Length: 229
Image 1: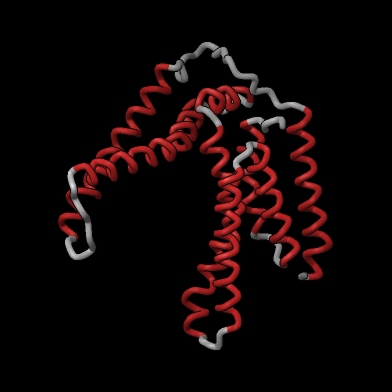
Image 2: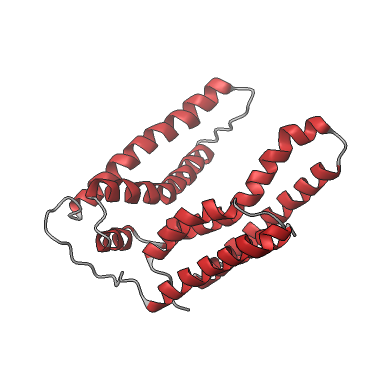
């Protein structure tokens, strides 16, 4: 199946969080979830789809239990929080694809197609590529602790600070510097137009996909959402 253009994913990540909170109702939420699942299926992320659906079911059950409970304190403290997490799952699914499936070179080339300012382009690219790298670093820190037979418990906060928080903060700083240097060596600050190995031009499939999504949300917000299904 044809993959989406990086710009299409960026546009989805910009409009999806706004649109998803404009409507209410089971049908509206179900269609938002379905669109997010469809995007993941385009990239054949079947395991991730299953994980997100399990998380969605868990938060749905929690929201239902809180709603039917007679404890006003419980509803006030956790009801809104659970509901926000539930509505953010489709947004997280779209963001996951942008972060995990799009390479930095593709993203830079796509941003140059719309003549995005270079400082903003560099900031967004480094930010998006930071999270997968940071996840790898976390795994390395865990493995290092296991090799040294270091067990962290809440009963020893100073030990937790020394062996976990400090290495994580140091790696975050180094990762940001390394990724910025990598982007600069790729010529992001060059005044000349960069060439790219990737075909990052918007295709007919991308335009049709965006138009269909906008039409679906316009229909839902204009008609179905007024019924409050």
